[in-house]
Length: 125
Image 1 (cartoon, rainbow, N blue to C red):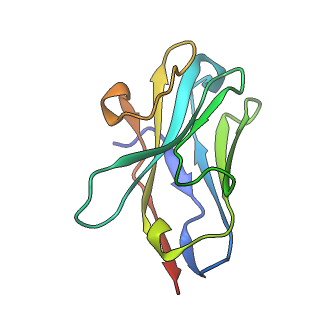
Image 2: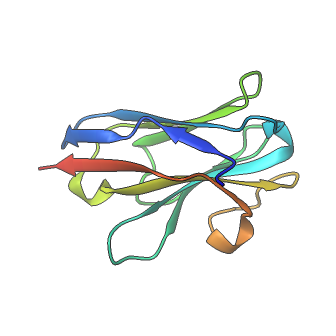
């Protein structure tokens, strides 16, 4: 069963915004490298952004300036604010976590053991 729980997906028009959340019951997120990935139909799962317990982030070039990740350690929840959404952002979005200090990039799927079930984001033109 998934150990991370995503929420907040939906359908928006191009230029719109969505906020995703990822809760980690029972985990102390500040001890984890957390990340968001996405997978469009027929494509590989790609890293979108990572964040470590100190708030250091790494963004994929495709989302820089549009997406913002944040971590609420008190709630053990990581958020992904997505602005200026485009049709190419349409994908299943997954939250991922790995128990380690620092992410050192952290945008490769193989780096993560914990995954959520995914939430669908659809952007229409």
